[in-house]
Amino acid sequence: MKITSTEFVKSAFAEAHWPRLRLPEVAFLGRSNVGKSSLINTLLGVRGLARTSSTPGRTQSLNFFLLNQKFFFVDLPGYGYAKVPRSIRETWGDMATNYLAKREQLVLSIHILDSRHDPTQLDVQLREWLSANAKPHLTVATKADKLSANELQRNLRRARQTLGDGGEIVAYSAVTGAGRPRVWRAISEALDRLTIPLAKS
Ligand code: GTP
Ligand code: MG
Image (cartoon, rainbow, N blue to C red):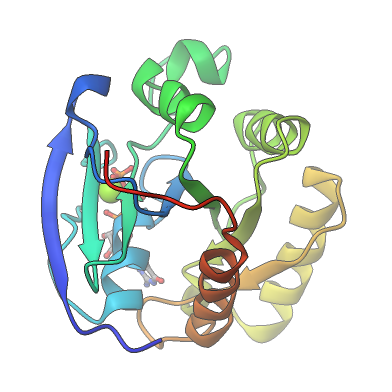
């Protein structure tokens, strides 16, 4: 897809601040520091559009980016950064879970893993929740450039087993651009699938 315009619209700390425009949205979610914001920047080819950091917990609100005046990318805060994680609901901001549960125009959730590490219990819970609630999702394993081809294949196999649904995991690198065409294809398909007519409210 050709991106002709990118615009940071807002950082929402409360539901009342979610954009009123009823346009399709693609959400980026995963543990703190896995590379959600970097994935957004490199998919769009705009350095620094979404704030990134080597310190976990950089993104603390829902950040909405309007693309081509037609759809949004939504950068969510990472989960699993609390000291004693117990469940997604307790450790990950209510903001994020509330958004996922309620947002009607959410057409695709991109669940991001760090390809170096096994998915955590929170990743498994998130996956189960997405499946149980019939939310279309795509799993992306980032930082693939940090592993050899063999290590990557081994880790992807293990991650598939841990997540337990046998679904595809796209290997991605914000450094080399590997996986970028595959992720865009999934986004385009999700945008095309949207059948509910969305109008400005
Ligand atoms: P939070 O907002 O804190 O939850 O983090 P995030 O998931 O948005 O991660 P972010 O994009 O800020 O990236 C975290 C760190 O990982 C940064 O130092 C990035 O430069 C680095 N990083 C992200 N993606 C890649 C990648 O594909 N390869 C490499 N080598 N580094 C990456
Ligand atoms: Mg971030």
